[in-house]
Length: 622
Image 1 (cartoon, rainbow, N blue to C red):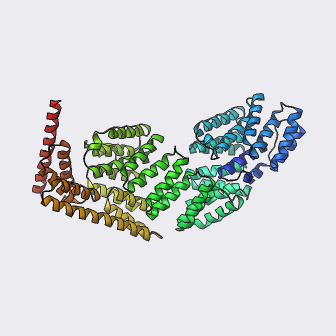
Image 2: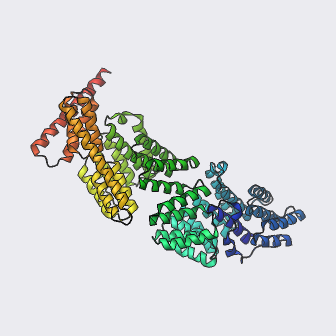
Image 3: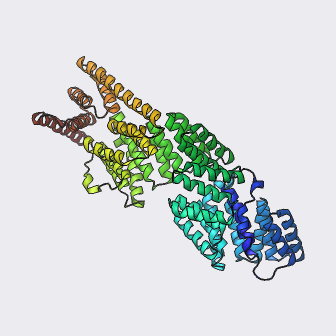
């Protein structure tokens, strides 16, 4: 009875994967794409044969009645027991279904239908919001994987076993493995609509839009009421920026399955692309209502809040997502990024650290963490971080990420950035040259950590020139504001503003840049006044503020260095800070006469020597 029965329970699995709110709606028409296939292998009783017919009709109560009748006649009829388990599973009586599958397994430990049924049952439990199951997701998926592999060992050509294993791999975010198993299932049954549908969706997640559209259209040709395939095709059209075609497919999917969280998210994405953010927010919230743990909904809501400048609301949305998904690295990373934009540097560092605890190979989290430390060192400017445990922990996190991704230039650049911030010599030529825009951004930040402003600006300008997507341009501009690279921020905001619907956000971003520059000028003027009055501690504080608010303000760097120098500090950290500010000044003023450059170079050498001597005397006394 294998083919149609397992196809039926796969239909339920699909309904769950669409994020349905009501179990009674889990009557997926995908079942009909396999209804012509042979039901049984070998001889079965009349009751089992009739029961399978009612399974096809989705009359699960009648099917269960017939299977119970068969079991009453023969309590060891494994087909009947499996049939009852599937009827209960299809009727969402999962505990009863599990009892029957366990019973069948005791009678026939290697029965492939039993194994596949148990695997799908496990996967279906994970689609619910029950934390008992969700908190044990990893172990449950591993068990489902083992059950599928056991079924394949018994019957290597069983399409359903490969199909369910493909779904399990997808849940484990092993997309290549998922696609491979689904293709094996499809090879064994080329008209397997369920597999065509889910292979198409996996291919979308891989960025393979062309093959995805081909498989999804084939699935729809087999069954025009395949809601999941219409949803997938809608996503494919969105990937091609064909919003109208996408909305047509999504409306079809929604008509077939009104309460699908993924469909509502796709609607939200479509409305966002049209600039209809009110409708988009409504759809994302509806997705959360249907399936509260849908991570994509929280991320998308946060993106819209961020675009409006409502960073606190964006962070609040993400924290709501974390309440239900405490082990999700992506949510933590976004909190880190938005907290950094909101100048909550310590909160940002905490979030990035948590993200790395959850995913110690995340390049994005490492980039974010080192960016946050760059901002912290510019803001505090006292060197305390680099003698703290935090610095050692940061180094360990980055080194571990590099160990897991030894070929990642971004990670090596992040490590170089951290070393440069700590005052250690760094030769970026030995690290490698960037070959794509993500690497160029990391390279620019590493250059910035060495106060090599012109070279950093060149890298950022290349990225701005290469970027034509409005969302990416605004993200680049926001990042540039975070690290106070105002020329790059202005260029990115202006370019994004020329694209349809971007004028208002561009205007707001440019106003933010102007406001920050004005604040830096104001603090610089106050610092100058205080310095003239020899109120040096207050002058130093305000020069630091000005230099943090606008790192490219050469006069603020010079004022800070001179004021520290004139304070005759005996603190090695302060002396090195003065030397660093003189270096930054020289980096910003390449037009200085050679005589002036030599003068400041001598000051730098003098300050560094004084700091070294004080440190040596301190060591000698201890």
